[in-house]
Structure formats: C-alpha cells, structure tokens
Length: 310
Image: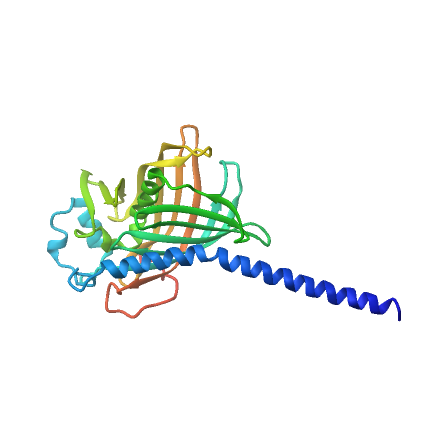
C-alpha cells in the first residue's frame, strides 16, 4: 500500500505534466499559426478596399475581351472558359501531393495545402503541411501580399526553420508563381487585370505582369488541345547562402477537368532546370476549387473535379 500510493501520485503528476506541456505547445502553436491567418486577412482586406462596384467584377465576357489577344491565348481562353463566363475575383484551392526538400536525391515528402488567391490586387497565401516523418510536420506559408513576397517554415508550427528576408528577388519570384498559377482562374488572363501578352509563335505566348515595383515574365506553352501544358521562366532561386541567382524554371500542367464550367488542370508539377539536372520539387493534384463569384450560374460544388470527359 505504501508503494502503491507514491506510484499513483507519480502517475497523476505525469499526467498533469503532460497536459500542461500539451497546453503550452497548443498555445505556442496557435500563435505560430497566426502567420497564415494574418496574411490572409491582409490580402482579403486589400482586395475589399480595391474592388469597386464599377470595376467590372463578375460581369459576363464578350468577344471584345478576346479580340486583341495573341491567337494561341485567344484559342486557350475560348477552350477553357464558358460562353457566358464571369470574371472571378477570388479563389481557394485544396491540394494533395508531395514536396522535395533538398537535392535530386532527397526523398519526396507528403504534402497537403490550401491556397487563397485574389485577382485585384494580385496576391496569394499558400498554407501547407509537409510531413518530414511520422508525427513530425513542417508548416510552410508562402505568400505574395501587398506587393511583397514572404516564405516561412516552422517545425511543428512552432520552431522556425526558414524565414526568407524581404528582397526584390523574393517579391518578383512570388509574383512569377502567381502569374504561372493563373491557369486555375483563367479569367484573370483577360484584359483589365494587368497581364500584357506578346505572341511568340502559334503555340506559345509571353505574359508579363507588374505590381507595386515588381515585374515578371512567364512564357505559356499550349498543346494541341489549346490548353496550357507548360510554363517556363527565368526565376530567382535562393542559393542557400542568402543570395539569389537566375535559373530556368518549368511548370507542367495536365489532366484538365471542368469545375463550375471552367476547364482547369487537376495535376501539376514544377521544377528548377539546373545546368546539371532537372530538379522537380513540388507536385500535386487539385482536390477542390472554389470561385467567387462563380464563373457560371451553376451551383458551387465542394467535391473534387469530375472525370475528364475526353
């Protein structure tokens, strides 16, 4: 009996200690999680302040919207947009896939992410969980908000393992990511949203977007279905020592499906094209897309994109 009571008291003390540590970690993690929420709040407030009743948001398209675009861009938009599409102003994506941290020999790690975009002004917040090992996730928040890029990674959402310093290179790189990913809300490619198109040939065109001191250019390559199959750019790449260098970069898009009347790619992969090797580092499928306003009069669906009818 004399031994049982101390053991019982020790067990109670351990439980209380574990609960206290858990509560402390939860509180710290809640504060760490504020990064994505704070950036998203700024993005949405800026969008609300910029959007006006006479800005054309949500208005249906007409042929004049496409008439001055390069031929491959015009065919692409005719292919992916419904006949009476409205201009989307904000988007939310859910992604499932894998991320590679390190060189070409590094293993892929499972990843889930939610990404929010606004069209006017251009911006996004990517909030991802990457599982380094069982029960060892890293939280990554990548964003372009208010004309500034940011990248933060925290182990267990608490311990900072990466926090990119502010720089013009980071701003331009995040704007390039945004421009490349507009394939998921293609009404943003239309005139009036800041994208300047230049023809290259019958299957590609160069898009340039400028915002708050940053300018980026991405080449869009269209396949025989008049859909974007690939994007290429010379983007700034962090060399790992706080410096940046220009590096060829490629994004691949495939498995186009119809979501609320708009054809968008359900699968994608991006890679750095280094002189000695191609280094894919992100690949994902799109599980859900939500538009505001809806591009068509159809009801919003929270289910994954349906099978490709072709």
